Amino acid sequence: SMIATFTQSAGCDPTVMVGGNLNNIGGSLRIGHSDLFVAEACEYKNSFLSFTPTIAIILNIDRDHLDFFSDTDDIIASFTKFAYLVPEKDGVVIACLDDANTVKAVKDINRRVITFGLSKEADFYLDNLTNHDGYYSFDIYHKGEFFTHLDMAVPGIHNARNSLSAAAVAWLLGVSPEDFKKGIEEYRGVGRRFEYRGSYNGARIYDDYAHHPSEIEATLKAAADMKPKRTICVFQ
Image (cartoon, rainbow, N blue to C red; front, side, top):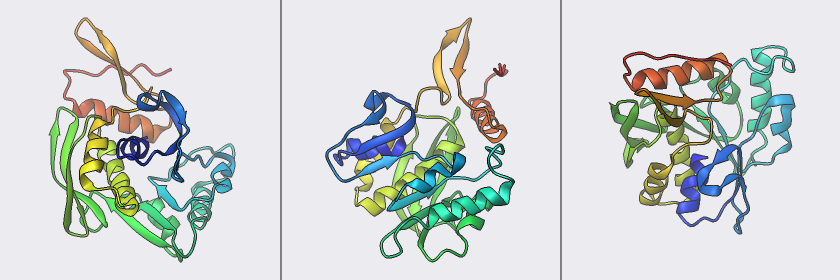
């Protein structure tokens, strides 16, 4: 959704297919008129192996969909197959260096790999991180060179990390840092992804689709970063 937002605002006119309702495209699907197709893929039942990406992003790999996969190694093997779907000549895999399972999935592939993460060991990393009640500001660097500064409009360190993968896409597509910055700072999230729904007696109400333990952990950390007096989690 971040990539859909900045490519659209930068004039790339993408076709978009994402898994949630994105306000700036009025839903989950947008038909563009360029050769850029931005898609959110899912590993469940190996459905993402039906794609033929030129750029493949792996944000993280966790124990999920165990009604289909046998164990974590089975999931990692599936993501390795996904990484191999990018063309050997000009394909690129963008992988999170902070996630051990992702690193394992792309470790020995003969494809071009660009890494992102919170440490300076990654190709795209952040520095000068500040937290403004859950909303992060930081500088993005590419291999030691300043790329841009971001003031995020969505909370959570996971969104800050996700923006690094989006920066790698912008760099590959030739989108200027200025256009990338404008698009990402306009990004207000997706429906039911820590979506602000209003307040009641002074309490801010957020709706989130998180159901996997790691997703719930990220959501609760984002809430804690906003420094409330207390947090009440109602799990459906």
